[in-house]
Image 1 (cartoon, rainbow, N blue to C red):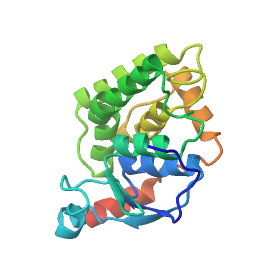
Image 2 (spheres, rainbow, N blue to C red; image 1 turned 180 degrees about the vertical axis):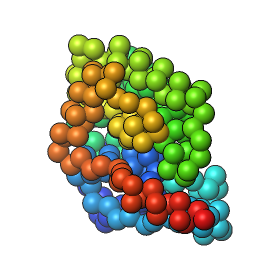
Image 3 (cartoon, helix red, strand yellow; image 1 turned 90 degrees about the horizontal axis):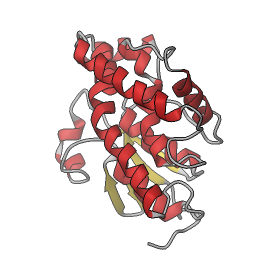
Image 4 (tube, one colour; image 1 turned 90 degrees about the vertical axis):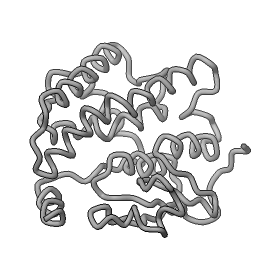
Length: 219
């Protein structure tokens, strides 16, 4: 696909404020400096399972983007699409075989241990459920692996940030909301700070007010 400098019109992002998956897409759009507009999908009232949304993503999940008629679902697929279409310098998704493979390895960890650990612990806490010790253990295990990997290096892959960093950021940064402390992982904390210092960084909403609103909506 030919890379272009910017879309002709804002990219529409179907999102949910508390979703780390959706935040990945919004964060990367902002880091790329691309215009986008949010369309909030009310997951609490199951708007993602209604025919209108299922026509965009039959799996009924956010995020989804609509780039002037090109519809892409799944947060990792969106990151790959945006990198290949709009990152003219090919900075965010390496083209060399080793770099590309390393990025894919971290995307797999993002879809597995990160979701089953940090993301699950956070969601259970926000919705008032009891977090299983095994879930927190999964989160700590991945944090330990990231701590070892990031010792002496700035980014997960190569010498500059990639979509691997974007994919791992959201739920890692918010893992304390699931009862898992970041203090034992100083290299991970430094990595989070480097991402937060990037031009265009936007954060995932956090705080007790959001938790209270979600619990109220869930009844």
